[in-house]
Image (tube, rainbow over all chains, first blue to last red; front, side, top):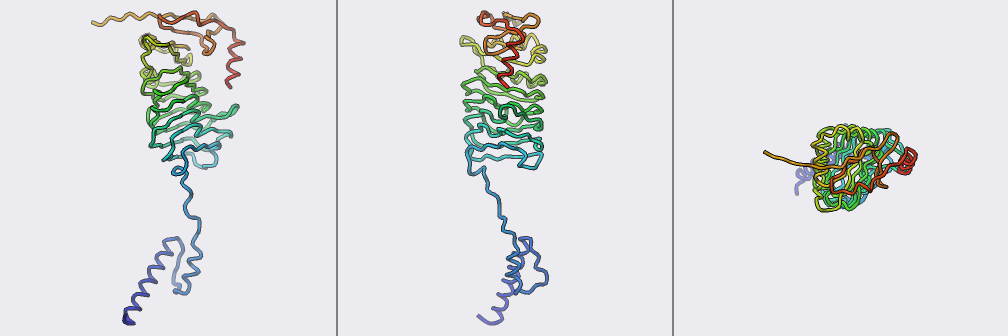
Length: 245
Length: 56
């Protein structure tokens, strides 16, 4: 190789190294190649964080304040259960909107968004759950003690496979929620006195027809019960459900 | 023309009372005709409040 070619090769390499250093956020400026080693040393070694969503099939968050953001998105790529994903033991002063994306069918929604006894959440207003829940066998307390929660959206919640009752307590501000599938277990929405008409229709439509089988009960807040139409009450009892409010 | 006859049993608690089947509490219970209304009985505020406190 000629000297001229060698010089060209080295100049090209120098330019590439300079560009690579500056791509990492360190300014090379007019420095000669003698300074490049020191410049490489200035590159931050933070690297990328660990992607828990790719590692863990069952994650639990106990304190939402660690996120430091009002909106969080949690991608749970390999999760097979959403049991107690958010099981709070500390007051949340930060997060208002939680989005959970889970591409897999999950087996449990037990205590998905819940708090330990004596603790309530007064900050989260909106939860988006993008997940197929049709195979979940337990959804008791799936949403519980989130007293300012107004909207649950994303994929309509499917309780078809649940094998025991579903208690959704202390959702005092809940307006919007959508169910689908065929619910065959007792369900309680005791404190949800602000459900929209569409939410109520969605819930009633999701009650399985239990004619000829054991009856189940649905407990609405008295404000909801008192505004149900005779047709809605008839629909509920025609499916062999007991309505309580 | 569509005609439907829906029969229901409607239980309403007296003033100051609640209806319960031992698990669920409410002021009004609307049952399908085939259900056993005898499962439901009245309780006072004290027991109702005790139940709420237990679930907190």
